[in-house]
View (tube, rainbow, N blue to C red):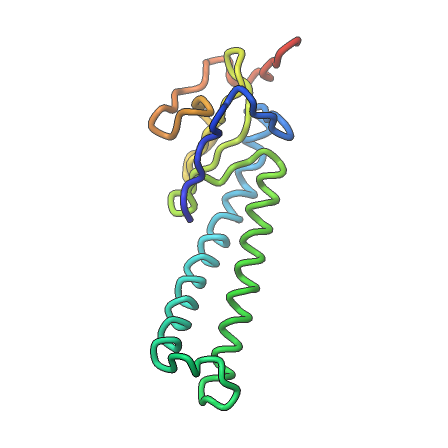
Length: 161
């Protein structure tokens, strides 16, 4: 899965919610279960794509003809493609509605919108890390992440708090 691009104007970001570090950490067990499932779906999508491409190359314009020998196989693969794509999109969209961004499925890079040092940032977690321990600006990326302040377990305060 491709990485998502940072917002074009981070000052105009209005996430549906801001996560505290504790809240983000509480979601890690669920993400530890979800990410491998999403990754398996993308691997299977690659296999389905390869098989559909092979059928297209073999049958050419006749690939969808009802009387060709692989018609049932092609229909099954089309259906599986649609099903997996829908499930994957729904899962990623669900995370997005919660202000959780899946940045890189291969590495398990996940960002939660949060608040640190007076600004909206990404609380950054990488699969395999025991907890959310880093953050970066909305315009920054993984390479720009920094350790959370030592008071990271205190609830962050937002504007006007």
